[in-house]
Length: 274
Length: 284
Image 1 (cartoon, chains in turn red, green):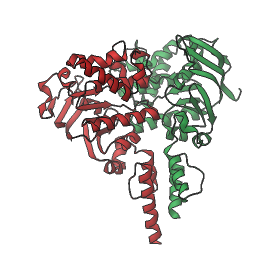
Image 2 (image 1 turned 90 degrees about the horizontal axis):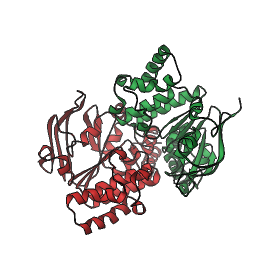
Image 3 (image 1 turned 30 degrees about the horizontal axis):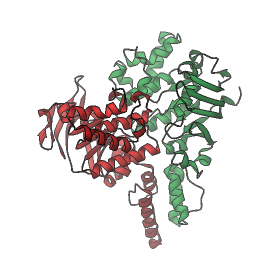
Image 4 (image 1 turned 180 degrees about the vertical axis):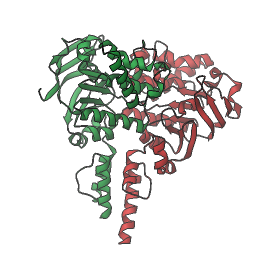
């Protein structure tokens, strides 16, 4: 899977300019996180990747094919978009029907649909809720239901818009597993998130957006080391990183293990200086 | 005025057509003026408890209720939602549920509760302008609330409750749509409101934040109040994780440093304490 965004600009009908010349290439299976202030253009950007929005100027290519050559419905086989608000996505009377809807319309074989329902419902933790009405699910279950709906269609590119919103520790662990599983299957996941701990634990490449532009696009270590730039984007590094920065450790750790390594290295250095 | 402003006594609730109790014999008190946080895994009963505190349960959501809740002396069961709303305000988890859907503009949305109270137009106008500035929504006052982004709607939802100056403020995961600094900014505003004497009750999944703001923390698990106490006593409880809650990362850092003998200070539960601990440990 290869996504190419070339000098993309988008102006809403209200004349609000939401994207200002964004150029990015996302390729392979390494999951990418997009972070940034509210209103920075994150959702507007990903809505271009399945044609929900069409460029005002510039170009979007999915595996070399211009996004404008197909409808969003046609792109849905290849690109799945999990909405920010689950209620925007759910409309049928059971989880099972929601899961079966997309594949049926794509012409997937009945046996394959059955197999996928079992596999996906287990992965998203809704195996015992298949006959439940989606509106009777808890807000977290609804979110996993919308993720399941997209996974059912087996797209190569999956776009998650704020999947961590309202999730507890268990939900975060499940999301992590889903993203790893998709990666193992050779899929590309692009995720918008405000939860920097989740971002730090699951993504290597981070794109930071500000006022319609992608102002940083780099390895997570390099991105979170730019504290001043991040502040201007209303982003704060995750807690472990902040403690390391506050105590002037030389490295930028995101995990407990990396923190201890950075700490011991700094301690060693100071002892040697004495 | 008594010390206790809110009392939940042996309170249980089962939604209509549901089998299990969502809240199961819950007991606790909230001190006047305190910053009180409720934590727990999803499905532990946090939102149901919030709805019960403001009277949406039993007056809007029906079901079987046992025990009682008193809000500054008022029995929630015997008081109407209108009467209770003079005292206690709730900001919903989903900000779109907060909108009246009768207001054509954000300004009208902010005016909605004030209008119901019969606040004079001039006072109302001043309050709206002040609140719009505080919540940074002054540039969208003339927009339709349904045209706004999730983060903006969340600011409108918060503003529409803050503007009513309730004595008790209940916030149910009210910053989920905001970027990290935006969320921090809202908590600073809430802290300021709390500082002016308003009792604040907050449901949140961000344990670092809970640790730095809360006077007292209540842990719900499977509808039961399993622990209540200071942030320190709750977050250093080794049983916490079995309730589906991870302690703040600072606790993890403290444990690691202690285990390797780099510190013998008491567990850090906030960022400042944690940085202090690490700096000291570096000196050897």
